[in-house]
Image 1 (cartoon, rainbow, N blue to C red):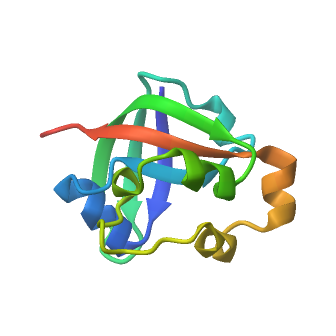
Image 2: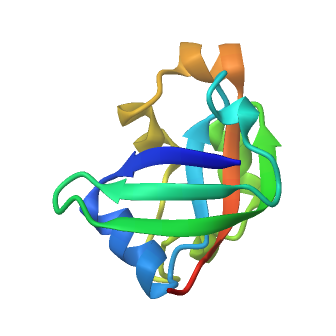
Length: 113
């Protein structure tokens, strides 16, 4: 199944370059339709460039705090020198939304053209 998602330029480039292997999203109704083996087509919101990826694995957690505590931050697109904080994700998804739906770390691999 093909899913469409929009991405800001920085995470889009990190996925394209291979330095980000997990995309973080709210596990809402739209994301609950995603299954391992599906394809996601990301659209860069700044350049309109498109990038297709395979869904390798879904990592479902109750909150971004729990996800950050259990996943390797380098897979999320951070370098070892970064000091990532799960509260950064609250810019996109409120605590209430996280409590309602949970969150998902979508492990992906780029489909080479």
